[in-house]
Length: 297
Image 1 (tube, rainbow, N blue to C red):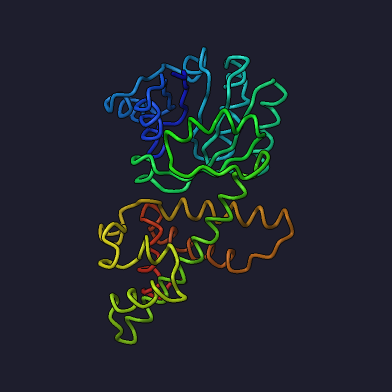
Image 2: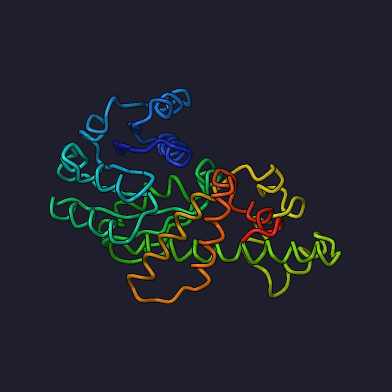
């Protein structure tokens, strides 16, 4: 049994922490929001009074936080993880943040003599609850070897992408594909509607032809063809448009820093920004189909 501190008990973090506990680990959770702590406790989780209390004596510290600024503060701040964690503790950050921050906090951990991985996830809230997440992991071979058994309790696919920051690089590249492809699939269904083509017929054809992609076959943005997609629940998230915009903006920043042209990514970010500004930020990102159907771009 491993003693684990889990910092960040939101929609993703809480079920991930609970799956670690179900796997037999001693998990101590903490979140700055009392409501998140209360919900975790109500679900059977063990809650600490502070992050410092959670990490003391822990063999591993996992974080699932909103953005890079929070990760920097929680890991390296004056009262952060590195100030209180055990000398040999493993740090694993599952947040989706910019590559530069991931590398910076990994450097801080290394300077303190601790192993650290960046391990962002794909699979959404449903995958977190089911323990079927995909983890894209950056870090040394030694750090990955320590992290992999813990990640296996929360996911079914774990890939060592490379050195520190490689997990974040893989995540933003993946979600760049996802954001662009969802817009393309949505435009195709809207065009089918305009041409009088039955939606199910389009799905039956495109899902077995060259138009096949995850945004179509697993997350179809119209009700019916894929019963588990958010389109059948009035686009209740899954993965919000606000989070997709965040990831597309991370990709744009990374592309600018690497001097790589991503014109479709920039356009996708602009479309999602307009969708969020029009009130769609809490809607599942596949709800972009309704935004596009209304003639908005």
